[in-house]
Length: 186
Image (cartoon, rainbow, N blue to C red):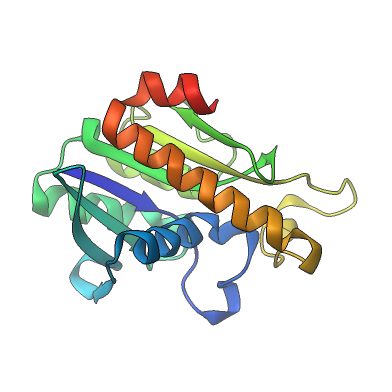
């Protein structure tokens, strides 16, 4: 089974912020694929099991806040015996422009606290990632402030197009694997 861990912060206060691009994609997939999430407190997440391309897929939205995302991811992986090779983490990337998506097979946290938490919890940086661009960041706003800002009105079309592209990229990854997805979308 594949596990898609979509990162964000819980609650209405953060719902439309840039840092919630992962949650936004998970909700977009729920609408597109026809599933809904259940809150599962023992896993500290909202969770669903679905099927895509005749394969079982689990999608989670950790409810631990971004900086503790690893807690939820590890609980789910341990309980369902999901291998790190079957994990895809979806999250925002401030260094990428809005509308840009990028796959990465492993590496550092790049300053992203959600990824830092997952690396620490799994004790490895060798897991697949799909980064969703939320930039560019204005030079006069600190990154920790910028990521908690909402997308502005004139970005709504670009945000929608970004979610459509991110869903296509994720579906390609599930059907054809990391290498082909990277070739098509990076």
